[in-house]
Length: 373
Image (tube, rainbow, N blue to C red):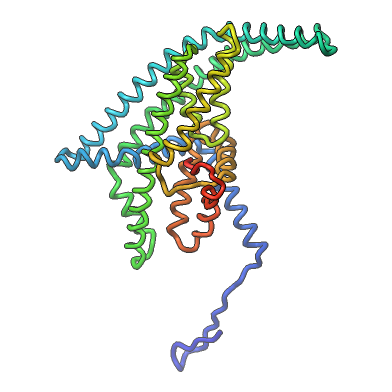
């Protein structure tokens, strides 16, 4: 293509270079690999920041509430963080008390389960040919490993406690500065785009912030209700460490599909190990099934009530990917992060097909529960 700016000037050739598809795909894959590598190698920095960002979005309305009451923003942020720290600290102390008792009782649980397994094998040996000595040796080996690994796990947790404390200290600091510099960060994001797009960017950010706040606050309320129902039900049944198991079950419930199955397994094992009859394990299963029913068909539609719907396929994929990348923290962060990414996709025209891919438009046809995670 030839362009003449002035009659007496030489013709300037403007040629657009078009890269082949395989080169574009290679560049894209290299970029993805590099990005994932960075996320993995600096996870000690990124994970507290991500947690802080999500919590900051969640508690920003509380800060704004105090600011509207003519309280200085700095004091409002500090007071909000203090209230949340006291609340979480109280729950943490209760859970630590339950965990310490659970750890002391672990060897007796293992002995009871080993005895039950041995009795089951004796019963089965009457009907099928089983090498009793081989099975007994295997049970003794597994019992020793469970007890030894429990001690090793506690040692590892004590060793890693230092890094955990650092993260717990850093997260409130990050939250404080994210909330304090909220307007500055907001303006920075707007400045990344051309002037004629700034107003549209402001609208998108404001809408995403509102939807994310409602989504996350709904999840928190749902988590509290499920934890109370689980704990109360286990206390009524008479299961040991009911509060610990109930809260753990509610946290695992945030992980779609996989979490619910894992959540019911531990209290059933505790019931088998501590009660004289297996009926208590069935009571626990019935309790968790009932709570899941309430959660799926009443709590999620009424409380979470979000436009964010992630389909089952990507929910499972992102949870597994989060675990591979960041471990347990990645499993809990994966769904909120995917929900935020979907919201961004839904508001940017070229990315809307990807938002549609992540979403769920068939749950009402199949009569499945709305995907909340």
